[in-house]
Length: 106
Image 1 (cartoon, helix red, strand yellow):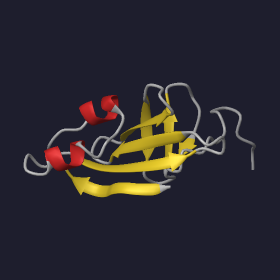
Image 2 (tube, helix red, strand yellow):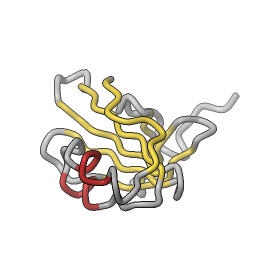
Image 3 (cartoon, one colour):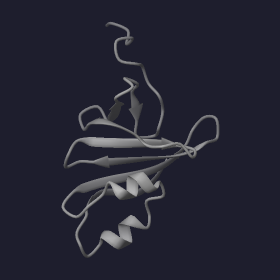
């Protein structure tokens, strides 16, 4: 995992510099001045490049693998996980965890 930016407040002044570092276009289009973001690049176990963007301000995040579209969902600061609408669970390294409702009890 490579950190591109961490807990960075986007301002009108630094927006162009930050936006150019965000590779997936739909993730770049989602940022705006006034929010705090983190952005990470990762490589999956299958060797695919991926990106995770987190809005700490809105508690929303998106994950994109290979040339696919970003899958958006809820970010948990407490657990460091993204839960997209699909119900899967990802950590900030892009690793897929359990699907909601299938986690072992205990």
